[in-house]
Length: 255
View (tube, rainbow, N blue to C red):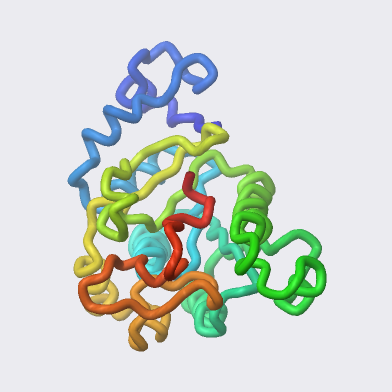
């Protein structure tokens, strides 16, 4: 659970005498109003100053995630470093896995990788759950490869607050996404790039020469699991290539 910096209790909690979320929840409305148009670096700086422990970044090394990594490891550079949580679903593109390795080496990341329980390869996954599980039970597929490993990672790392790379312009389903919210377990979830655009993300990546997945140069606008990701066409939403041909818009990590 989130425990604020004691010096900031009066500012970010409605009652300065209440210091635990069990006694009183975070004033998310206040935080979202204060930071709605703030630069992502300002949001991350607030997090580093006011979240004393249990803060991590969750990323699959997409374009937005790489921007946040660069802020945290190249610019703000806190000590100790913010742990990075990566879910190896065993179904990523090879390019994604290579980028994870390259980013770890480039930034000296405190990288923590979580996979489906007891399985270490795509072949082993198919042997246990059948070939192409995503074709006949997408819910179970994501439960096994993303939801459960995420919860395991959050628990193992004693996470109180986690940073994501989600943005409002990625899809209509995210258009009203706040910067600060609580997940289903009461952890603080921070979306520092919520008000940034696809153009702003790529402007930063190019101008700061940040590493990125080469699949973007091949027509992929959003990159997830290899069997469930296609290229996108001009005019489509950024995440239109995810779960192509279905009504699905999220994997289940972000309910």
